[in-house]
Image 1 (cartoon, rainbow, N blue to C red):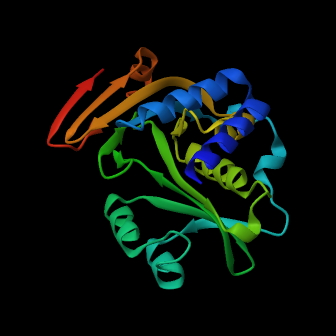
Image 2: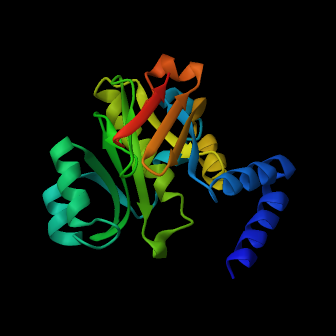
Length: 228
């Protein structure tokens, strides 16, 4: 079954994104047989980069920043909002912008001004002139309505009014659908960060352009190496 899923995924990549993308995906998956390997595409979005006015509108939905306490009370341990995640996000001062269908949660995204964990092994650092966007989620019943993009654009507008340069984020290099989606919204890729973890040893490398955005990843492993 696993082999069939891989073959199906590769066939889809080839049809939708071309042979280069398919071969890249094969390479990433091959390395991950032996080690935990990721390539992160660092990117920014500024308000002037959003050329489609409709990306600020979602008819029938309203959006706002939602306090962590309200999320915990109404949605704790559902919609990927675990009590542990909400507690850690609250301690960092992270903010959630959400879209609602009436009183029903439809989509959300999280935003941070501090170095943020990618997972249990790595922490992302970035230029504090930007706000880091992470953990976008749309309730399954509302997927396909571009709510994630609308929520990001509205949050981008709000942070710009607060004096931020824009949003900064990343997408894994073989997540071709997301890369295409964020490019349509207005994100611009500026560089790559390579992450490799073998056992208790972790290594990271950020390409030269990442320095312009102070964009780098720190391993949390006891034995680590960072190349900048």
